[in-house]
Amino acid sequence: MTKLFFDQLVVLEEGTPEYQYARNTLIEMNMSLVRFAAGRFRSRGPQEMQDIVQVGMIGLIKAIDRFDLMREVEFTSFAIPYIVGEIKRFFRDTSWAVHVPRRLQEARVHLARATEELRSRLGRTPTAKELSELMRLPEEEVMEARLASNGYNSTSLDAALGTSDDGESALADFIGTDDAALELVEDFHALAPMIAELPERDRQIIHMRFVEELTQGQIGKRLGVSQMHVSRLLSRTVARLREGMLTTR
Image (tube, rainbow, N blue to C red; front, side, top):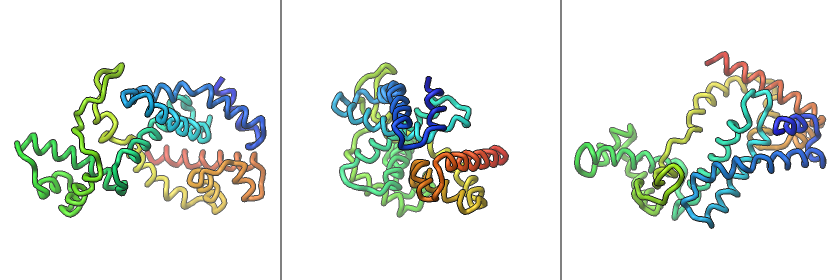
């Protein structure tokens, strides 16, 4: 059924009642994915669970808008990373008592791990120099990360938050974990020169669709072409980029 409605989205014009019906039906049909992904965070309480589900719905909608049947992957496998990514972003952006730049939020996670590792190894609190050597960062950045940690409500990463179907949940299950999206960095570097070689209009379409997150209908209005024409151009360009990525692997 999911594939059937995605097939309809390809041929229907964005903004029409028929398109909205198919899109809304896909959202309703796949709400179970959001509840599944949110279930791992149920220890945060019923009130916050409502926020988590709402945030997860944003990830589901993004996944539906960006899914391409030509990917030859199951929608479930494609959507779950989007849903979990939105939820983790929600935790990251709301867990700090004061605003701290994202790079320092991430540095704090690495600092905590390095500190625990050296403390276990040395039997004492490590110095900034020892941390900088392990983290391969200048001492100034280590000190800055330490200072930024004051903006967070300090709690042991092993502090128990409750129980779930998978056993006891700890704070480390929700923060300080590796972001799977970091694995995409190499792909982005490989993709950049391929995008640079595209014709100007194709680059514009890619930018409007995946950076500005415009719908195909909105892109068509900007370029003065139909939504179907944008869909064909986008599919052709994405296929070209995908082929180039497979060749470089």
